[in-house]
Length: 209
Image: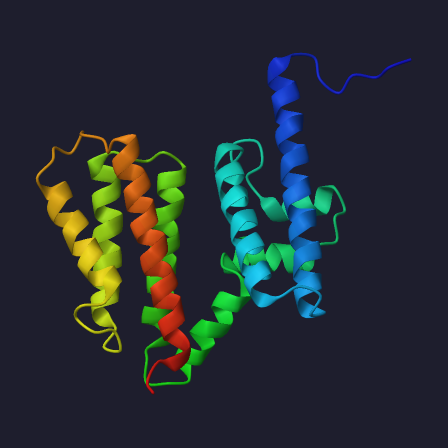
């Protein structure tokens, strides 16, 4: 006799979300272990880890009403994935990013400002992926990012991230609060953010030299 887990479409979608969340946590745990054991290269690790973190953030935000605690979900299904919880819930960035932040910390760079920049970059990129494209949603994120970048004295005035964020902020300031970025504009902004983020992260290991 076949046993159905759901009684309607809503319950089926809930269990599908549970399955996706379970799979992301398990995949992250395996990826973390592979990285620690040097089975995967740092570049491959960072690319895949960032994808999993983004998927996790997107999914966890949509199921927060039925899964208010990821830790409780983890314990309920006896997952035994401590590394994944640390990466997805506690850290929110790949281990390679943490290492570059640590390199900057050993210099004269303020660790808190570096961490603030990283978080602002990721928040802005994730927001676009969640289709938060209204001016009054995007502008504060870019403004915070620009402000944090300007605090870092190791970055030159013409640093890519600084100039591009200024250009976008100027463009957005001429639009109405309720206006939305077009699909093309959102795509270009995400590209500029990702490019600036990569340049920023590449600069960290040589910070203070």
